[in-house]
Amino acid sequence: MRRLFGTDGVRGVANTYPMTTEIAMQIGRGIAFQVKSQRHGHRIVIGKDTRLSCYMLENALSAGICSMGVDVLLCGPLPTPGIAFITTSMRADAGVVISASHNPFQDNGIKIFSRDGFKLPDEKELDIEDLIFSQKMAALRPVADEVGKAARIEDARGRYIVFLKNTFPKNYTLDDFHVVLDCANGATYGVAPYVFEELGAKVTKIAVEPDGKNINHECGALHPQIMAKKVRELGADMGIALDGDGDRLIVADEKGEIVNGDHIMAICAADLLSKKKLKKKTLVSTVMSNMGLELAMNGMGAKLVRAQVGDRYVVELMRQHKYSFGGEQSGHLIFLDHNTTGDGILAALQLLSIMIKRNKPLSELSTIMESFPQVLKNVRTSRKIDLDLVPDFNSTVEKMENKLGNDGRILVRLSGTEPVVRVMLEGKHLDTIDAMADELCALIKKADG
Image 1 (cartoon, helix red, strand yellow):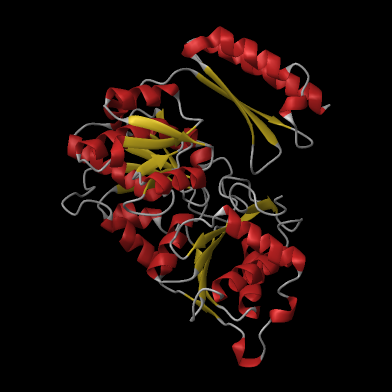
Image 2 (tube, rainbow, N blue to C red):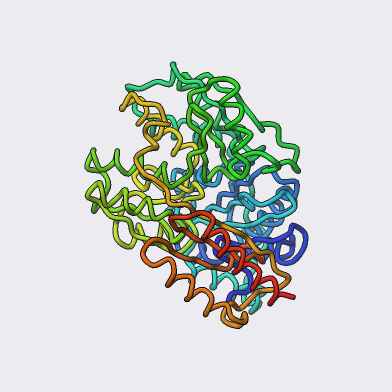
């Protein structure tokens, strides 16, 4: 039974349980206790996004880790994939990211990477919970010269920028490209502009002035319309909207039309397939990806396999079966040949390299797949809802599925990070599935009271 960790670390409203300094300190102690059992010379990397609450949580985590005799390496604001990279390149024992990703500034979270750069598996998270709630660590604190110390990696951003640029083909430049870049006032503000500018692009920057409270606010991957509008106004070649912690992106083509993660995956999978680098001719996505993506992959002579929602589950499936590429419709794109987690900047670079290679604009490349009409509606509830206990819900879903047949599908799931039920329908006719979604949402709202 999980008490702290959800589908992507610990998350909640900052300074309320479980996102308190007291719990953060205990999590730090738990991570440190785990790594001390592995080898000598212990170091843990800590990075964060730009939320106001990151300062207090960073200090609490650092104090907890040091109190268990492990050293801390502080990176400051750095994208989540940057922390994964620094963790492995510094040969650290673990990496910790303080971020609530795409959530509003008042929320925050703690995500943990193992020394191999992959997110901590479920059993390790449960071990940390057990250490915290069983008080096992209370009698194990070191004293005197055995406590840890904290130091700052002054060039963390520079290291990550160099890594990103090295993923771009050395014989290509972005000299002829004008890119609109929306950094969501988040962790990429001090990285992404330099990457694209140093590769030669003309960059129009949006949301690169974080103040601790404006992260994701009417900007970034959650609100790509602002970026898309600017592309149209300026006649740019492409728009890139990143989220608060930089592990995903949404793009716009040269016409200002938004291109989501499914279309980007189809473009990148086709390119990898042509280079014989799409291992087992398989793309990994989630149950949320459009049926059109599956048809596109089949048309290439490849296949799509689906994981449950969450980039960590996509990665787990990729590692289990030795696949090389996967992602989510929301814009998490994982190129395991380059990094261990979703990386919005890296994904944008791969997409730009394909545009150069094919000498085609993004609007033309994105026609590689045709999306079925899709409706996604969120129902915020006052408590966790058991859908099996919602009157008439399952029978209504069954009737709708019979009506849609093979030309549509229904997916209803509970969010892993907030009290929200997500209702998704696909089908040939938008009016039909929209009405169906409204009916299901009404049943959930009625049951919630």
